[in-house]
Amino acid sequence: MDYKKILINRRSVRNYLEKQVPIETILEIIHESTYAPSSGNEQPWKFIIINDRIAMKNISEEAKSNILNWIESNPNDNVKKYETLLKNKEYNIFYNASTVVLIIGDTNLKNTKVNCALAGSYFMMSATSRNLGTCWINFATHIKSKDMIKQLGIPENHEIVAPIIIGYPAEVPTIPLRKEPEIIRII
Amino acid sequence: MDYKKILINRRSVRNYLEKQVPIETILEIIHESTYAPSSGNEQPWKFIIINDRIAMKNISEEAKSNILNWIESNPNDNVKKYETLLKNKEYNIFYNASTVVLIIGDTNLKNTKVNCALAGSYFMMSATSRNLGTCWINFATHIKSKDMIKQLGIPENHEIVAPIIIGYPAEVPTIPLRKEPEIIRII
Image: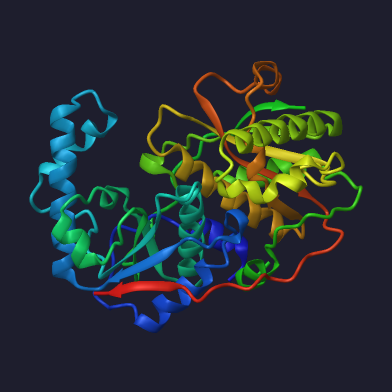
């Protein structure tokens, strides 16, 4: 797919068809994600693929509960605007996607967030090039339960940086308005 | 340009032709960078364009000196492997590029690093789609001099996340070996 088309088609998709993305396709997209650059070519990203809707629902509940607790202790935090949504029992942070991929990295490395975000960006574009939809679900970084962390296989000293749902889009939203880029200075 | 071609052509380019990239092209690439997704569609990125080789050399000297000081106090840090390079007076962290773009973000926002890294990823791909070369120069995040920060116009509470050089490649290196992606678990 032409890059211009990817630029326009890569949207945050929140409504998917039932059809499951084949694991081979997910693995191809993960492979292409590792073409991202990383500090000192460290390639510090690791991947967890979750296709199980019950596991996804459990993660959603854990994240919602942790964020709601956070809002209770930090009522001035910006995230408070999501309180009503998070209290809605019907709301699943992964919407109706059938797969979420977690890109995780070692917190002892200096640039884990940046490096894993780059892999995440590549992941979303590679998916778009296959006419698949994605959405970065930042809420899913809020997992605290030790049991859940163990179930997911997240090693010690690792953090979830890029939780990305993927699937066949039921609809692709139009591009939301972008602000004019703020160019602070040209020297 | 086809996405598969971008995947292969987006390399860290460290050798450029003298020819300056027109400012209109840089602005187009910056515009396309803002197509990146961001938390809550905040679009928190801001841009500084530096075409002046003396200004670039000064930033290089400032960064080298700060990193060398860091190594002196933290001799076990991984960055020590760059000590000889950093002590080389000929070494410019921006190589012979004629332009560097700094993508900066507000440190008070929660996901600045991730959001600006996504814009950085888009920046590198948009440049590649125009047959331009780029390289993310992480050393350039190490600017401390208050005078320099003022000269660059970096507002208070902002950090440099993505310093990216851009130019016409003198040569495009081949793709460095990628490790097989580590898939921790498929659930």
